[in-house]
Image (cartoon, rainbow, N blue to C red; front, side, top):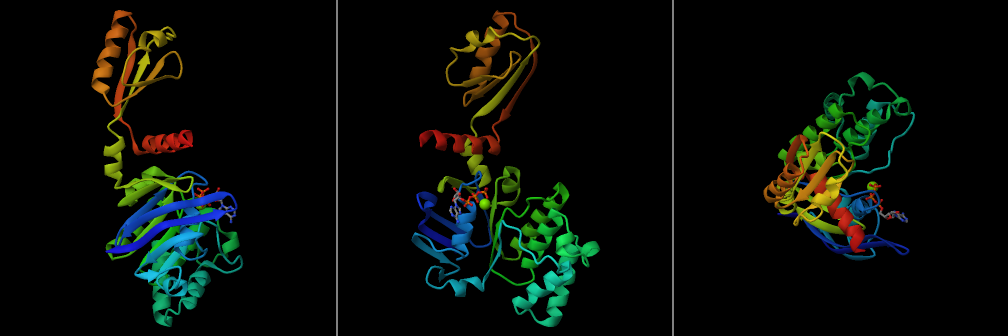
Length: 312
Ligand SMILES: Nc1ncnc2c1ncn2[C@@H]1O[C@H](COP(=O)(O)OP(=O)(O)OP(=O)(O)O)[C@@H](O)[C@H]1O
Ligand SMILES: [Mg+2]
């Protein structure tokens, strides 16, 4: 079942097309990752999908509701954690959760129960009596995410929720989200951290300059763009002349970062490697170390964004 269906969605600020003709669908019960560099349009898309801003054009159906015509109806069914920190400085951690529960009309006993559970799940017990303004950035972010779970929802939007979290808090949050998805929640999640997207998301859209460049599962993205391998050769001695020896090899892109490191990107890695080894051997150039690794999602991402820049 489709949870989000956006068609030709656009949002312009003056001449800036922050979101430029995006069409996408998100299935229920999934984590959908929105991945893109700074200024790509991630937050603007979240604001559109959560009805905080109106699109310049396009249509948007979420949870079976026309989000442009009936924003209030939709807002009752979703949760959102925006990118900007939001907190009342003098409120304590537990009061923040409590107040949020009251805003959502969660009944008294249920509210207390949820609060206790969230304080525990988000490692907030020790700081429950601390005021928001006295918290560290990561603690504050944890409170901001935790309080969203004070109420029930069908769909949760998270705009870079892990920024400021240490590795262990980050992993805990991702695992917490994974478990919530198992119970039926759908999550729309933005990040520019690829490993995170790979760990959490069922599908990933790569976005840049307001446009979606690709949508697929993390594995399919890797298969689609990751036939390419990266071969790294480290030479024993600095040998600048190597550049001219290798310049004629077809089907590959070669970088020399210093005279001793050669980095080769190729979809024909075995063939290319054989040719290179032959040339090195013929010229008595000694190799210190050699490795071949499949190009990872991070490199695919950087390459797509780079190509997008050069095509414009
Ligand atoms: N209220 C606004 N007024 C004018 N321009 C805006 C506004 N909001 C966003 N923009 C512009 O729209 C583009 C997309 O911004 P957006 O905040 O959606 O990017 P992002 O992908 O969330 O980036 P980041 O990773 O830095 O959070 C940027 O060029 C930004 O300057
Ligand atoms: Mg943003």
